[in-house]
Image 1 (spheres, rainbow, N blue to C red):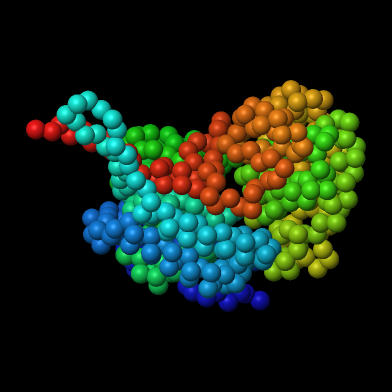
Image 2: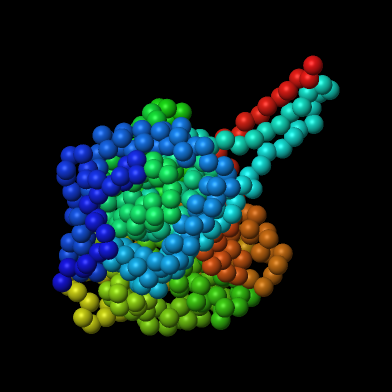
Length: 485
């Protein structure tokens, strides 16, 4: 039975008006839990993107650009409250669209509300400074919005990523053009309607669904965009950066990861084990910061593998609305990619330490894969080097602190790392030596970390989202030097 959705899904939002794509074309939106067509969305193209950029420019020159920081903040906080009032609706949309369990969809909606609250409260807290300078001068700085910002958002965490990128950009006074992923964009459309209902001026937020190679490419190449925020694959991120370079536009790139969780012999395993597993299977492993490599000090390797295996065997995958441990992968293509890596493990004779269960009755058309733990994986093997983007975790033994660092830093990525130890000095040494943007000591993820700057190094990208730092990224610093008399 086809799901009943709470609003028309085949429209895009430009200059405060919902309408079909200029071409009239639409795209099917798949339900990953059963492979059926969930809805149709607008197939926006370059002409729609151009109209959206023009609408954003007009908003900057008009009502939106005239608002004070405090007024912008109040609008964002109103949007946050409205999100909380619609948590159940948004959670269901995200579950249907992305395939994640309802409880994860709900957590994402709550996180979106918190982003809007955080950036709403921060909007009028961004200030410049005065600088001691030559006699007879007053020197000072202030921050200004870039102008029009483009946001290309992936399918795995639409609400959270819109909150941390669009929320911060609006707080600084930018007008936004949002291109959600063609695989999952229902909550992006819902956020547009919430923004309107809360009084966000027309053109401050424009939403153009469509294919990445059409609408996405048009947005990243548009001369009227002054800043780009992209979350997605390394390959596409390079294309985005190359397109932005033609107009000398700054880019925030949040790309892939192969994040290590490092377990020393003195770690509290009772505390660590739930984090170690959940960081790999959340959203069926389709998370850039997934803790997909578990590094274990050799003297406790067998013990940790066995305890991890017990937990993995108990995991259940099934339809999103069944609200189990994990749902399906987003698409048939993603299912094929993950299956390919599991085939590599079998071909190499690697030890499959444990697999979870796909529940009876899971629809045959759904894109399900068993959560899998692979033990004693060589650090140079593809499973330990490449981002799988599925519920597959590898366990690697290390001998000492130096060996752990060599393995942890031995991939092109550098997004997140976890360190599990009771030795405070070791924890700080590791935090300094790990090549990544975030390090969690005796935890992983810090409950979502809205306030914590997030981003990577190397193939994981550059720039920072989340926290107060994002406000600096979505603004430009201007220096003013005044000579008196």
